[in-house]
Length: 502
Image 1: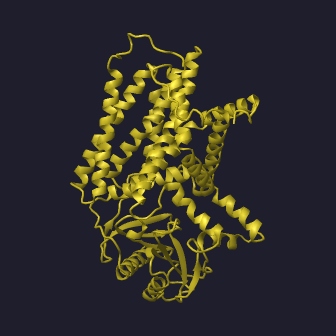
Image 2: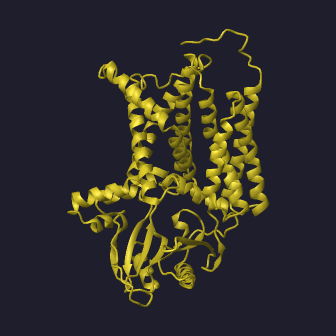
Image 3: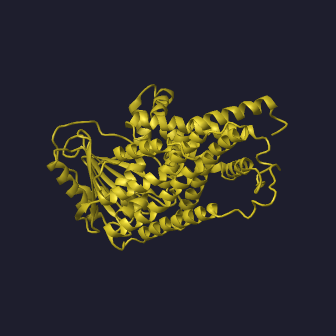
């Protein structure tokens, strides 16, 4: 690559890489951190509901009974917009019910027994907060999703410019200098993690950009393939639709619809059973089926009020374009693979996501060390970055504690208040290394408090995933403490000359 790229091009790529990376560092870190946690988003939701009844597969009778209970509750609330039952085939070994009033902007999420009876609320305060942060940055849906997609495009540009800016990046893939200049250590860490996980970085940024820019993609698709017909283009993403009609109509018979889908796809499982605009002539039944051999999470089949099958999204057996669109989400979040492989895929995505967070952190650290080496140290910027780097995980822990104690607590105002407070605290002119240490002490202290709060609220959890997450939180706290003690201990190398350059 060194012979193919001119020094001027390399210099331009390096300038672009540094400029965009620094300008967007905080937003990129927020998206990377929340996205990494959302790899185990289903597990976090199970952690929030550790006593929920677990089952391997839901029966058709249980799904229908739960859906009918949701329809009754929605009607009593004055809406007929949407009711959905989610089964273990969707990824969590629970049966849950959700009904939505789009006009009022409200919804109810409920826990359901294995036989279909409603047990009470299902709490998702913290996992819901993470989803809205990662998908929309807590902005209104369309502009938020579009902004996240644009950031994905810029992240892709940062990655590609970083590769082009370092002609020796692949040749030096296993070069890691330790014990010398801290800036060179950070540069090697930054470059090595970038190279080793490059396929992952390209995959998640590209799929994230496409998912975020769905509205723009839909508009382009409608003009390129459907002569500007947005409805036909939208059917590629959501499947065929029933025309809106408010005239009263009887509810469809659900048992024959379930039997039809099970006979047509005997190797698949029903992941979600939903009904829209129920009780009207425009009602439709949606059945999402999951198949472990398919990359797409689910394929959605649509039935009208008369029980007639209208078609599907073609996510499993349709044209390449439809299957490619359906594959974006599982590739982005690491939700694919046979049952024995899926946990390993999630673990890999979790580690690679953490590496992407570390790459962002080391990039900012390199810039700060370069300024310090040139006599232009920026302790104020260092404190602000530490407030983001360590402050955001601390804030997540505090929000998780809040939602455990008060499941309906408003998480967005709390997050905004805590984030603003952390940045104000970082403005206090103390030594940057002291500020860094205090943030890490606060984070390492908050994690055991979070685990203790979880045990106090829920008792000893029945779900082993909740136990695993609590153990992982305690392990993270221990590692932070050990790292703090190590950094506080007198260096054994301080008396010997240190190599400053390679």
